[in-house]
Length: 335
Ligand SMILES: *Cc1c(COP(=O)(O)O)cnc(C)c1O
Ligand code: SF4
Image 1 (cartoon, helix red, strand yellow):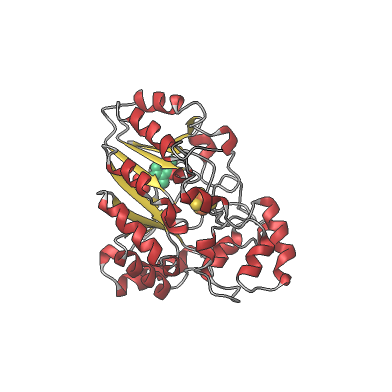
Image 2 (cartoon, protein in one colour):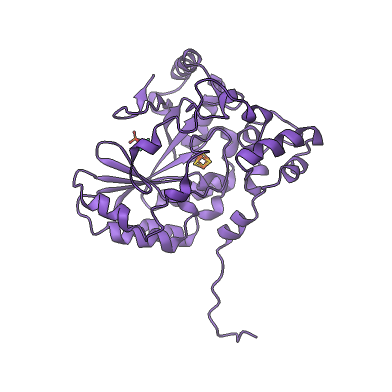
């Protein structure tokens, strides 16, 4: 028996929610009232890249609609098993850009750490779906190699925690890293690339806010939303709390066929983001990763979509359309 006075270390609510994510294709189909005809393909594709989606995100999907824009981002489909010419396991040259395990430097002044391989959601179009995270975990040695790399290059002014999703790490691990980073005078900004405030808004809890509020760097949080339906009241509340820490909130999306490839949908997304205190940053053309060819939107169509968007929105609500070109000095601006 545990005496009443004993300190009990509670698992945070977000970690319990993360552990309850749906990973069985049959369970996802049942939850949204889709029939078993989707099951064999979903099982086959999930063997290449497992299904994973938090229950709160599933709750925002329309029931019985196989074309729901949130469902399409997470449901494994038969098309993923097809080989398409030009689609490769590492389309953006991450393997070549890795300096020490988990540290990618492609651009001047900023480094990106693949802080963990774990994500709360598995996006079917993810360019890191084949990434060898087991060899690329900078936290494995308590960040030593990553910190040494950053310490040795005074031109690095911004450190980006990415992944995977860095907010799947515990507050303790995040604190450990930024405490060590705080000793490096040349680092001015911390950036988080995360989908957790969107797919698992429970993550934005008192512990996370205390860490971010006291981190001692300028902070930018870049979330990842592809469709306005992803933003519900819980997400808006989580984003509002993040903003109260003083962090700048930006969004990056991926242009995805069947999810957000029309101007009205993109305009609705920009407006929903603004209402939630987030400005659109990038709209990425799909990285040509093996298994994602069915999401591709041709560049000419993408340019037309952006022109349509620019015609109906103020400039600050039009994201920059970019493509990642392996070896380029930054994201390549398309429009
Ligand atoms: C995309 C990316 C960045 C960030 O680029 P910004 O244009 O500053 O948003 C930094 N490092 C790597 C390796 C990237 O892929
Ligand atoms: S959250 Fe980001 S890294 Fe994780 S699967 Fe989705 S796109 Fe990939």
